[in-house]
Length: 398
View: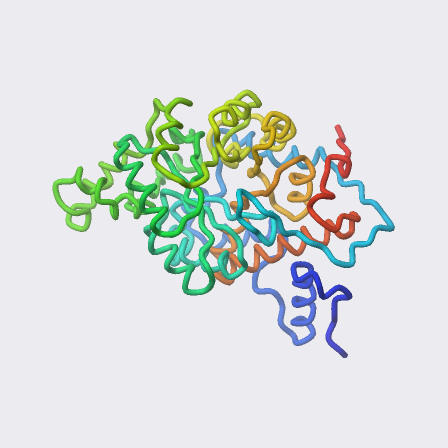
């Protein structure tokens, strides 16, 4: 039997499915599950319960997590026929950066709890595909090491996500380090001044930071370490205590954004924006973009679904780009978010499960699968490029 071939070799994302089929002809099946539900179940089986629940869980009764998924179900794609989709183009320019597809890797902290190579593996996978990774402040490896790891494969494409700590000199130090290490944008997470009430983590008394995980950017920083009596390597318990005291500044307001703007030349995005009034304020304060997000349902239980907020955010943003995360599990979900006005989406839990099951290769497999499904869904809906993803493609059901 001759190998299966695609009839449109100009679309490398969609061609991933034919790689899988061709490998099947040779007796090789995918090592990772394709469907998200199976991927999550395999991760549940492999990981310690505390680690899995930390990634998979949400706030309270997890109503917000369910609402995020239900919101996608309220929109249906209405495919259009007899359109030329032989070649597709998923590329875009976002904040001056050329990207091969409207998909970025969301900042997920403390990835060492699911795989020893943690953010290093994610950075290599993302960079090898030309995708942009958002590195969490609470990463398991210092931000410099992550960028060096990615640069060994391809040009590093990284943005730095900031949890705003209490010490402003420390904020400045983190931003300077990020710039020096090659990160090209700053993403400020606004919805995590406090940890949300997360029953799964509380039931197991599991918070990885208190065990010394996820604080690499802190204990490698001279300003942070200046507040310690001795180096972290000699007294990690004191370093962890210091982290709990500095982790989050709880009294920042809109006016404090002026301080950030004065500290960095990088584009600044605000992540965790839901209300249309906050979108307009972000634009008024000269922010470069926002990310509509409810932190994947991990902060406020009973909060509005992120996707329900997206159209209003786009309407209030003017020319300011709007990105989206929270609840995306498939290429069809990405199509819906883009059609509702998002310029790009951030992927979270799916790639973390890929990391848990297969390290760098697992991350890459998950990302390639999402991009292939995105490409195919667009093609089968009569959409050859991102400009064709408009609200008219969707119908809302009740």
